[in-house]
Length: 318
Image 1 (spheres, rainbow, N blue to C red):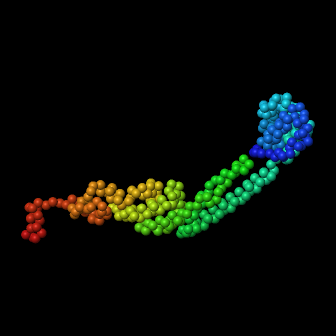
Image 2: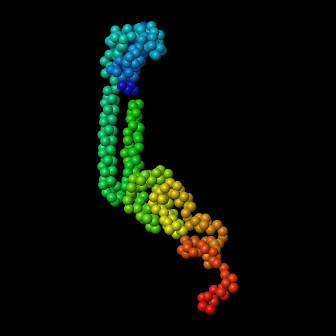
């Protein structure tokens, strides 16, 4: 059994006739003090008022003297007097507090048991609701706002009379996954739409919300939509999508502005101007889109005047 953290002592304890008689005896005040100390020891043992070192090791008078910091002779006297007054009883090698229930915290223990019962009842109700919600989500192919809100359940530590209870706090942190998806679909119109909210996507959303605020994630979506590179204006015919943006590494890059148009142009055109295949100069403040003519990468052949004359005669059939 776990030990009782407190016991009952009435405020009129020292008006009790036995206590008054004890205090008038030789070593009487010490005997009363030892009596109170024995009550606390019985609470620690929490075994119906029995007092022992362990269930298999009873106290000796020498052990009690050492533990309570009294002479052994005083301990022997106190045990004899308390026994004569019917305040303790001996059972073989062990002894116990007589009428221990008078000193137990019965009301407190009942209150603790009731609190435990209510906590377990609420926990079972929450677990049942979570299971029903999960079954409801998996039974539908499309995602609705009611499906997309999950609850992170934290642990709550409640201390009552030095008794520690660990319970679950319900609805301490709600994650509206569908709201994130809806914001992405409404902002990133140039990127592929999200039609289904999978467990993997929920996991990535939850991970990003541990690092970024909701507003910061919205900023990432806005930056992605404004980026020509991420919306497909690149040499790869590629567009970013929701899963790419929700990657920790990619979100950090977008949030830091790596894919902003100004930086992308600067990275692709480090000099002050760009010479195109037609030998025209493009101002560095103008974004250069993807190349559509795949033959622009080949160097144009240079012909001599003699070769040009020979080619002209061959074409004319001369």
